Length: 216
Length: 181
Image (cartoon, rainbow over all chains, first blue to last red; front, side):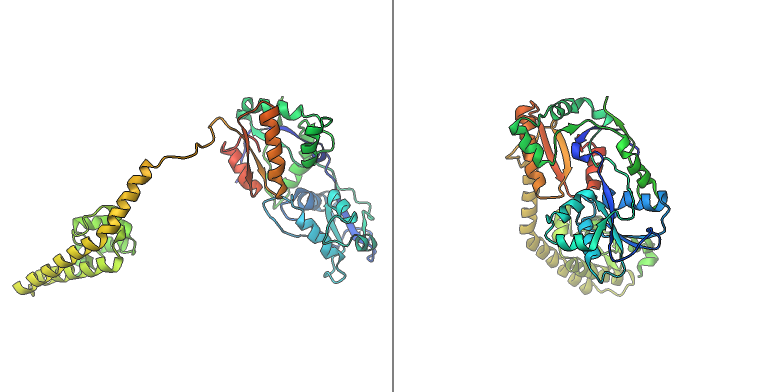
């Protein structure tokens, strides 16, 4: 079912802008391209774990590889990232059934290599897997933001003002902003960061995105 | 006499589904399937629900047999008196066995209408934000953000709800059950 609803965006965390997705491969296989390879991915409803890398590698790069999503926590659209962690675990397994690479967010890669993921051996990961040795640059995208119905704009004006007036330098505000994962500030909304997401969602087999506009 | 001969074949297929909801029709004495339904259950609908199906069928079978005998001319005066007496006894029995449960049902039904809320629901002008609970920390984060919006931001009617998935959250936004997603 195709749904059209006039949606207005209010803003996002700074960390949601230019979200990075990467491709990692095993060091013990000599690859010149992804053609003919078996690649692991995050949950099939995750933009960073599956939608964007799947679209970009197959449609933009025209790479003839197989991408296997690791479905977990469907409905949360990759927020738990357990699909990506499972993909890394499987890639690390020496008897993984021929998987040579994986796609995941830069954030989860950083956590894994820093030893912040209990189920991943950070040392083994750095020994066995390398990041981006094929020179593949997956596109960045904006991850998530606050949305309201256009007809409800007036009701949320106060929320919009208070949200964007939160000062990271205020120690009281900084605590909760850090909890929310913010580095410095709430950012204003923008739509161009979702262009690649819309393209990926328009890729056959995926759902369609809602049209959105920016709050003036 | 077969029910098809009475033109009730359609009614039999339509109603003989073992479900009580159509048994209100039986109060007016209709053929349903192979059972003639007496005007015995003149109780309200909730009383009819409380009567076991097998008892209703048993009573109905007695009545049907009596009518069959009368229509085919095989019933004697003694049969008619005997069957009628048995049905009257069953009718009284049904009334007495269901009396208590009927009263309880009636009391429950009336008390539902009179029940008052001990806590008031959230006001309708709440500015309600929805977010997906991908981690147990989400409620801690939004409790603190709510405190900021209510106490520092001057939005006393701000509140939030958690969803288990994005699809339900989007549905809630489109249906205006939440204001912000």
